[in-house]
Image (cartoon, rainbow, N blue to C red):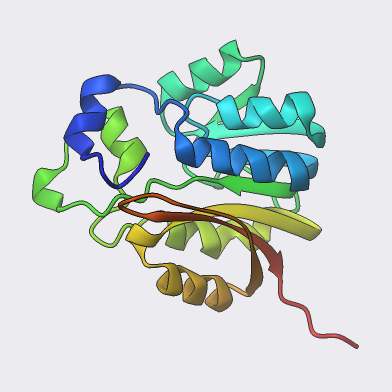
Length: 198
């Protein structure tokens, strides 16, 4: 998904499940390098990113989640273990060494939203950060000790604002991937819990 496409343009292509695009490729590339142990992809869409990790990454188990039942079905058709649920809510504490998330991030005027699954896959609310906030608030709960997350961030959502939210949630970050397009820059941030030495 790139900022040059409107929600309406993306809706014309697919109305049930978000299909792999530039952001998916960037997250998959980082995930194949960094994902380890028990891996969860939140908001998996088609399941393509998690499938790449399961095939070529260093994961012992790959689980995906999505609120969209069509996305869960698509992921299952790729041979993935899919859980239908909202963000991290279905999972118990300390479940995963790695969590992946490509959040819906297009800033959207509430008056212009549509009530279908593609809108849910693309719209990040007015700020573009509507789902990033609850994700970060609950991330520490599901991560195992020493765990990590790979979060895709678009410049459309406000890079500095997302970095501030990451710090407020108790995580440090490093940028492990970045690609620029005419309308936006995409980054993959690797998050780890902030710990004081000694």
